[in-house]
Length: 164
Image (cartoon, rainbow, N blue to C red; front, side, top):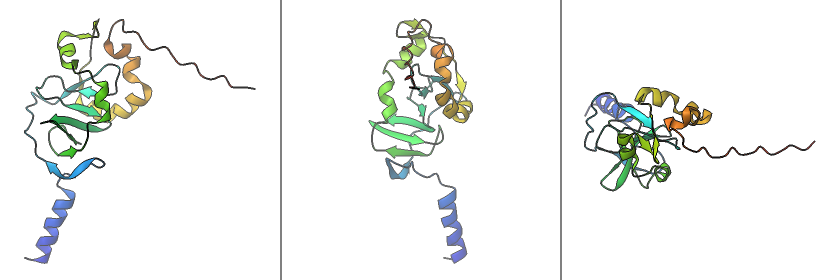
């Protein structure tokens, strides 16, 4: 094989093919069954978390910490895109323990813990662009507490008094 052609193939493999996730991922990208999004994904912020979910598809698809997350056949996968490039993740992501298993039912009923939930559906590109600042600034907590009416907010923690 021509050395130039081999070099081009290697460059394509290094720079074009999606890389697996970093910590916790196996070496290979896994090709999961595609998700049929009815259009560009729109997400909802799951109350009392920094987790976003795509509610209008059958599969659970989450966005957290700059990654898209997807459980499939009892294992977890993550990607930088919502529809491809899934890398196997060796454990259950830590954010998932804060997501109630009933979140989709709550979404459909527009209820959260017995309270009216007026969620906001956000285009995925907006979530990808703003998630860090929203998390830092407690955007959803400050936006009518994730749109959940009458949900009791945890008491504000007192700042320690500085001694003079």
